[in-house]
Length: 350
Image (cartoon, rainbow, N blue to C red):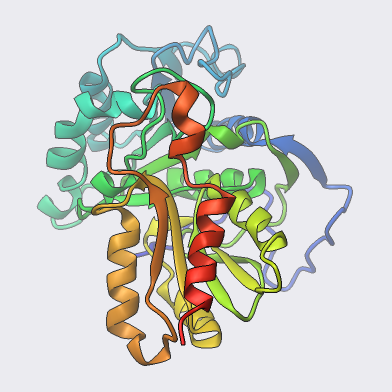
């Protein structure tokens, strides 16, 4: 797994001994995930003139989801610009810029469009820093609107995380709340290693509190979103809200919900502590079941926590089929019922 590198101090960070503002303080605002991404990009560009934002339709249009709205007007065409519809070229440009000391933040317009850039990401971006023995940083953050749930057409609702996780050298980050989105993106941009930043577009318009003076936990730290004693539910991205909804309907079963926040680096310590308490685990992700992230995590839990388990590790996932047409995606995506079926099965073990 990629080593966590400490980020530098950012403007607005409190000193270690300075008291943190309480929740609901005047410095906090309610924003959507889209607004949190936009704010993070704006603040990163304002703090460091090496930060560049580019991709398809990100400049004058402000992006398909208006995530980059206003950046072109604020920072000019040299720092926020449109590219041709050529994902391989977009990532290749970013690699060259990083070699020259710039900090590129390219956008791949939709998750399914990342395939043309696969060679650049896997063969070059992920390996360049190691090839140079750490002398050349790959300070590149690739933003990708990802996952399903919005009724989009083909190639617009893919779960690509397993591809990137299998590639050593890449950090893989998936936020679930506006606050995490802001802070994880700021930290990703400051990372010396390349980051694949997968944004759950189903939660783009979810609102939450953001206080830019109070940093969230860093990349590589999971969050326990709900404490429980019976079953540990491990998930990330938009399915965190699904897991929390299932926990409210669990018929006397007390679910602990862990939001991983990043898949590489992985906070296995938080997972282990929870499973030692509950003795049961269900992993939930949108991607197909076979060789999905849940398969790797289930194997590791079984290897390292075998004697703490009261039941097999179960998975609530998508199906081993291509992503379906929009009218069928609700049947394809794992939801509350699929998760609760796994919980019932785990609790039924003798």
